[in-house]
Length: 552
Image 1 (spheres, rainbow, N blue to C red):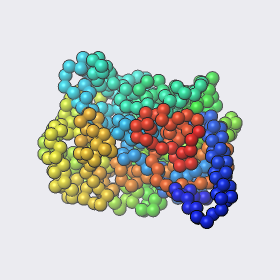
Image 2 (cartoon, helix red, strand yellow):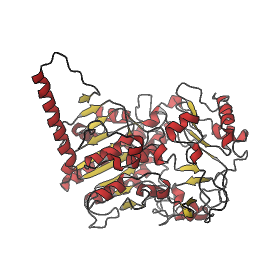
Image 3 (spheres, rainbow, N blue to C red):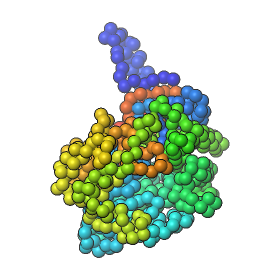
Image 4 (tube, rainbow, N blue to C red):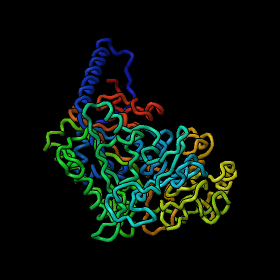
């Protein structure tokens, strides 16, 4: 496989004729690439959540993913692709479809906080501000009053108890997920700028992912309403209990994509037309990675040797990819469809020996020092029903979100330095320490945080981001040995394979550092659109991926 480097050396003694010949060849290549990009009529974006770059390299070399290997042989593999600073599903997917980091997209986690918002019950915006925003499985109407998630479609509508309010131009208005995202998405841009375009996506939460529609609220023509945390009548459990059950859920997305390739809707209705941009998220690998190592989950060593569950999950997903390619060929669409395989996030730690689960020591430390309510009664941590989004959450309390990262919104922002001092005084792994004393751990706050994620004074950005030592998960749960959300190496280093039709230079390997934010402008470039039509791309100066960075 060929490798693209980010530099080119030309000897001084090279003749003018040779130089001109080289320039002519470059011009011809640029022209060929331009024609190649124009040949793209459809883009299929696939997120195999948890897919590390090391997973891609290992499975291709061992012939464990023959379909992905064929795609890589015909396309480009990016070996140094990373998330833009946080790796929860929301910022991870936002990177892929907005071209922006949390700084401009405004998405830090599916459970976050915004100091400018009013409670869902405060329809006049006259009470206190500061709301714990929860756009997860409880965003569907099934979750009203803490109800059971009994329907695959989340109940068929939004849970009004999950929708906060904001004062906008003097008018108190509800803030749905599509109002919450701060920039537009590729779905909106493509619909607005490609004649007759159709857009589609399928994800894990039926209503929380409404933000994919973008601020217009109408970006995705066919947004599949599938809820992974709904109760499967056949098993009386949700679809995340074991990876083989997650396959049952992911099969719905496989069928949706196949139906769309066939010109149908995600529900199988005919006559919809093949989407210009479409794709889906898949959770099987993520669930297999999280499963305890003693039960066959995760990896066997620091070299990403997959355990039985991960190995089977990768084979399952590769089979899905093979079905997509086969159907595209069957419908004579393979020669006009670009395929991008990547992930919203990775999973940490792959090396089980680095796993540390001391409980949520970060939240406990903040509570004990009165930066949050000492009894844990803040935000929606203590609701009437015991479930989130039942309408009884507290306002103006601050919030902390932890997994293998800690995002802290202080109750009182004037306590910032005191809170930081407390954290720094307790970096060790022994209680009450937060296990952030290693060389890859950090506490981000102040001007450095504002430069990376935006000014906390504006309401959305956390006051403090704590990245603990790689391998630390702020939980005592015995149900999982890996997590994501932060910026640990295994969270952020992702697989990325891009296939474009009529590429005569397939099999390229690019080792240049890239971020997943570069996928969105690349998709627009493929469709011969200006990447700057994406607001985040314009604001952050996001480049297209190497190989797609030449002008039209």
